[in-house]
Length: 414
Image 1: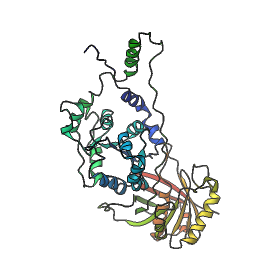
Image 2 (image 1 turned 135 degrees about the horizontal axis):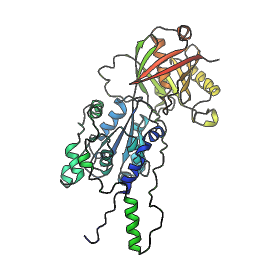
Image 3 (image 1 turned 135 degrees about the vertical axis):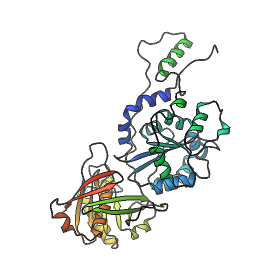
Image 4 (image 1 turned 45 degrees about the vertical axis):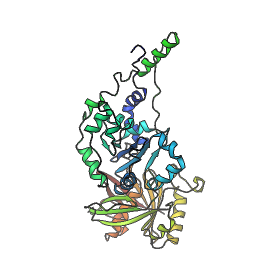
């Protein structure tokens, strides 16, 4: 047509330009080494993933049945969902999932960065899911109204070729099956139709604008703004944690943590279990039932935050742990996170210990509270602190989360 213009896709071009920043985006989103980032995405409308009857089940399963140290879950909802229901209603619907560790990207937030950083995307017929497939991310379709789409469109073709989520079936095997069976280029025949001019939209659009204005273009290149680095930080789980531990060796402990309300435990989850309750949990009555009481920092940083962002400074951490141990005498430990890779532990008999993980060198490490759960399991297996401090490798534990191994040093604290 005489009035038609090949303009490219500036949104997709910005995503393409940001692909080399994937590892940086993952660090800024708080994804730790060994973690998988799963993005839950929904467009708007009555046939979207968000509108499905199974969506509350999916939220509950993703945040309750996936180990929090092995998976990070992020939700990207179309702005029309936010504006149609209102931010207050959306917040109420997602609050329990947020307490269990879900990161919700706001309507104008870094959703493109989350796609670049993702390991898998669960979505529907929206453009965000198609963009994910176009940059080579494994996609699992939680909803797809074939009847609403032109059968000849690229999005409809993706719906015919991408795997579909089976509602009310455990999602973890489905996600792991998706990742295990993935190979580069799986959807290339479909996603090659994303745009005929990848990376050229800025040049094409500016040329069109100046032609319509009957003006000469500036001499400098037409550049799109680069995607800024996101700044979500680590996921803070506020709901109680069910922790399954296994002794793998004399000083090696496997730790798997699930946010409550957890689904049925995995078939192989046959180890010992204990409960960790954050001090800021929405239901404070649960703290009295905790094996470990956990704090990631004071309510007010002026009350004793250290250099590790909101984490406790050592002195106030001791005071907090002492007060918690005296108040909740059934708890085996009070655990105060004192840095990105360290925490202070006070045992029921008053022993103070500092647990420090070795820096990973590749971004944020695991939640230091994992180390405290490993120590608790080690002590419950019949060991005493003296066994740990003495020996060939004094004060060292190996903590395993998923496929990651962490070396942890345990020292007595005055």
